[in-house]
Length: 448
Image (cartoon, rainbow, N blue to C red; front, side, top):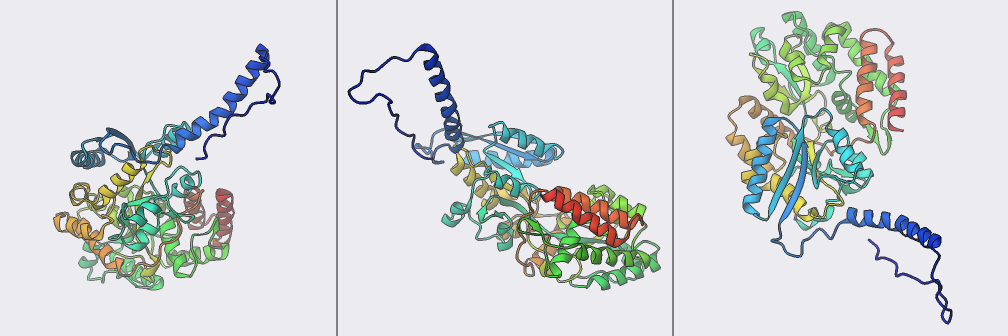
């Protein structure tokens, strides 16, 4: 921040000073207050240099995240461990369900009362970074105070917005094609494999449908994850700078691919596809028995397994697996104006790199970002479904490509518009070309 400008006087040398009249004094007072207000707010927002003069002085950090009771218990245990190792640091914790979380976060930041440390995802990271709400963590990373040396490179890079590290991955995830292993074994059918082409996947699904009577694959034309991976395999991307990275022609090709699959009865009917478009794991078709596969995040395997007695397997999405990347399941970000930002960064480093803390947190926020500690957690994990998830990510880590840019403002709307357009094509309410054109125009409005 710039130092305050020294006061000046409007009384020329050699002139007598004249006391202002009451009205003039009032106006000057109002003017001073008007000028001072933003300066005072700026001082509060900038905070100090982030370092306490006394490293042992008491510090209370506010921290905000979304999740359920189990996540709250794990997080509070990990923070208590930090306090045990740093007795002068305590925490004011606030958490809530995902529903309404970002409304609350927006209210806190707009009201000048943001938490020092908060959880965020890739739907909103770029937006908060653009508002200068998030602290740039680059200098901490470069100094080693925020250690990413054991992270997959594409994982921490997926937190970079406009050249600044706006958030650090709290865990890793990637796209996963989950399939019903029990069903395939029963009918002596092969399992899908990482690297099979999209056409090969559809042909496999057609065979599964024919032999089992269960549609071979959920139609993922409404799934932005699948569309994004497919785009990257075509040399394109979901976003390019502040614009869309694809055209209506690209979307038409994607919709045509899945119209062909529906015509071959490799997928369920539109009504059933609609059920599977829900993000609720209990409604995924692979666990409701209405499809042999579902297109999900790999770390959802344990939750999916809780909803079926069948054995499940997981592989990468079809096509070249280098189109996938180490995605941050969510991030930790620090409020740029925090007076205790150095300590807040140290807490992030602790949650990611301290072995005791990482073992406490387990895989609740995705697979541990630190690869060495991920192996430790994997060895301790008794859940077979989570072991599968960790194994497939370990395999894919060697094949991941560079991370794409973090999604831009309007991403949430883009995702919902894809569902709307794809379902128009699935139900036959529009041709694939018309649905694609509708989607692209809606996207342009969403990101404008």
